[in-house]
Length: 248
Image (cartoon, rainbow, N blue to C red; front, side, top):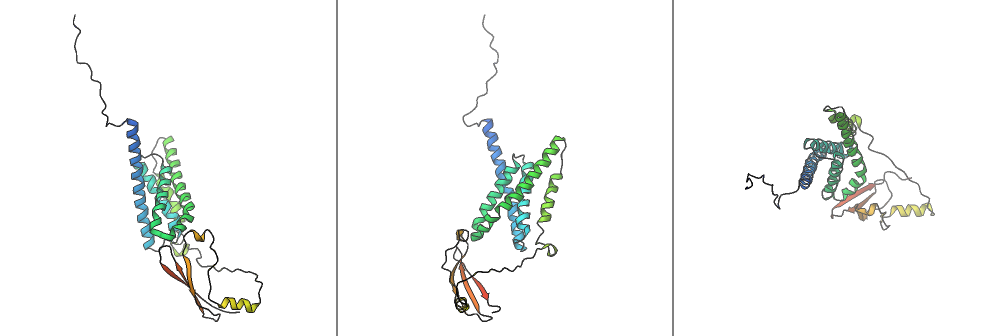
């Protein structure tokens, strides 16, 4: 007897160029993460330009409002494209945004480093709150749009300095006392001379802040001036002008 020769099912063959399913998922997840970070950074850049054009880049609108917008934009886009890890994506977005500000701000990047903990704290607080609301809604088996309301308290905090009625005092007076083993005449003679800056700078001031290059002016009469020229790392010069207000 001859065996029946039917159409045997063909075994699918995978070509060498066809990626594995886990690898495809990894590439897709990485692509979604890049898309989320790119869109969130675009929103953050637009928000910063608006703040700078409105002269609000020295208010809480920058230090609280901008990281809130970055975190919310990252979380919103991550939900739309079904990307994983909202908190992680927010952390990456803020980190990349801070690093990209270096070439733009120059020596001002040191101030960004000092404010970085506040940026991370605000951004991760917003992202964590959004994750908590989404998890609560998932446990109750219904969709909730309340996550978008979480940014409202942070935006309220960011109004400090943006509105006249909510601005904190910007001017302050500081005083210092130091005992010097010298006669009043010697102290007066030293103060009347042109200031010099030959003392070594502290590690914080040596990180890239503008350095005093030269100084002009002398005298202690009311109206006498001191002009100190500072030079930035990029070679730009700025003058600090001080004037004697009173003598006693």
